[in-house]
Image (cartoon, rainbow, N blue to C red):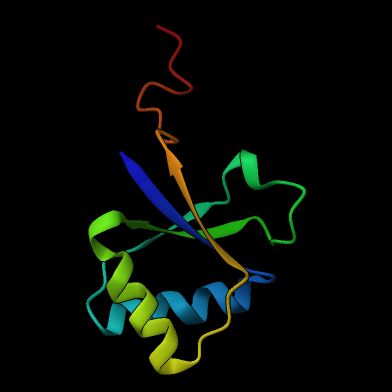
Amino acid sequence: MTRYYILFENYDQGLALHDLLDQEGVKNRIAPAPAVTHGRLCCGMSLLVEAGELEAAKACIERHHAVYFDIVGLEDQLRSRRDRYC
């Protein structure tokens, strides 16, 4: 499953967009920026958006002129058994 990560230059931008998306009912959650994006300009925070919510998120960004760095689609970044040792 492809999940989309919205990346930011700083946390203020991320939190501002998180609030806007919540106000418009667009499902999203705060998540660490995926490891594959390290080295690119981003603050380490991202907003995780499912594929079905991506167009609504983009429309919200455009409508409010929200600031973000990039939107990256990645496959299978969530590991349910990560950090489990037994």
